Length: 240
Image (tube, rainbow, N blue to C red):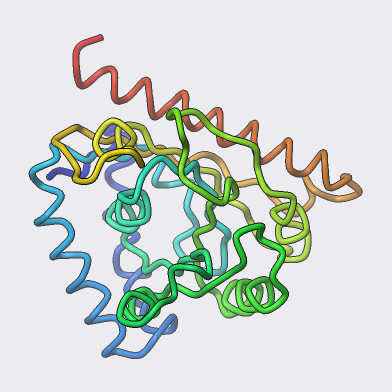
């Protein structure tokens, strides 16, 4: 598996790793950081058989401080792909039904925490805001579930309130290739290249005085823009 960025972005990304390491230490305990990177290494090894993983737009992700990372959701692979693409440790919002014995403990061990599927659970929202204000990056899939057809579905209404209350940058992202590699109707993954693109952050002032509908639509538009970039990058791998 390889992680690549356009030449003009590769140098800033390498510089960011030291500050990302400091951020990781503030994010969780040393043991938690070691476990996170161990799991990351194991998943990298497992995903190597699926083909190359490439990322673009990495400089759009803040090197320090809190940020809400919002992405499309194509596959079970998505949460790992986003974590592999970034040097910073991520926190994950996962639907509450996944927090069953053993699986729930594993999700929590790598920074995951539960929220109701509709994204309206008070405890989940509070925990998201707490982690953001502590300077962490929290990953959120605003569709609430994996795509049925590989396209971006409707966003849950809770994303607008979360975005507005966080008062922090919202980084849109999109993944291409994971739907083909492991769609929800397949039992096991298959080899397929993957491309993830991170877009320019939506700043808090862009949301000022916006209605929930307008904020949700803005986030949706920005994820769609990232999806086009990710698909363009994926197509370039095949010479299209």
